[in-house]
Image (cartoon, rainbow, N blue to C red; front, side, top):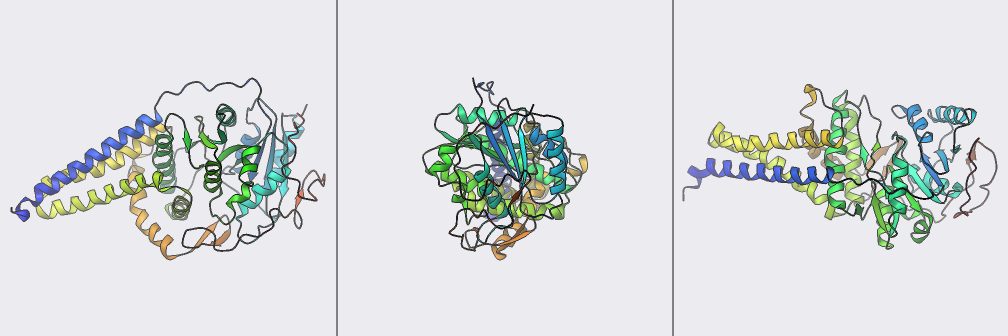
Length: 434
């Protein structure tokens, strides 16, 4: 057999197989995000919820995010706790102003701004804020929301309905959606990562039951008994990524994690390629440390398909010219078109023509990011640097003390109710503002 003479045909055939594989996987993801969406089951009574929102730094559209968090449309009582760890945080006066206006206008729900102080070694600032928020929470359910999200008036209700509608559920979370038009390359790459890579794969992996062994928790709500069963959110101590670790603890405790259907909007805008790289690096670390291989293997297969198609295109051009390279070029085009189509189908805004390459861009920067993660065991996140171990967890040992309610803790209503450790507190219905 003349291998050298048949190499162009073999290259073309391999390219055609890669193209077929990309198309088949695209159809599977497309069906997952466009499947039947039954109307959510309304509850006869909506339990009270305490939403803990850790904040550090001034996010894009921070004021709008804070206002949206308070104007959540939830049919029951909501207590919102904005938890900071620095008196000098630039977002602190913004949150205080929004909360003050909320009270002045007599809107429903309670809101407080809390300064928790810096975290101890072995604990991220976000987890520290979550723990202190739980200590303060008075709602029947306890939820957490990221500061860079902009919830609409349906998403919190949808998460609670998903949680209460499944008797085995210990936690429920919302899928995320980047729906704002991209301005820069980083915006487009971030939208592809969220809308075309992670969210459709989560929908596919969750299946009709909408359950997963982990949580992608930009907005997540827990039953108190589930938090008790896992030892509280501090089960994630020593981990870089809290939500995925907590979701794994919930799953291991015998509960299920349910993904609701109403998406949570993430506010973005003005992210350059240089600014996207560290974000992507953290997400790859999160995936490595917090997501099971049963979920992430598809990402590895898809990335391999892209680079294989790239190699086949070069080989085809070198051995047989354009004709031999065409199937591999079709595979590369299919990868990009698949990402762009999934992004739009999921609800993302259309990209301008100058950013149509974004589907390729995520893969093109991934080798550099992967190498950086393997060689550099330090990650910067929200103004702090964390040393990591080989498993991408925090290198520092977690403290033995569960909650430090002294030193630097303050809340704006000065009620002094955090002098000791009192979690889990009784579920007390928070008073509605008149």
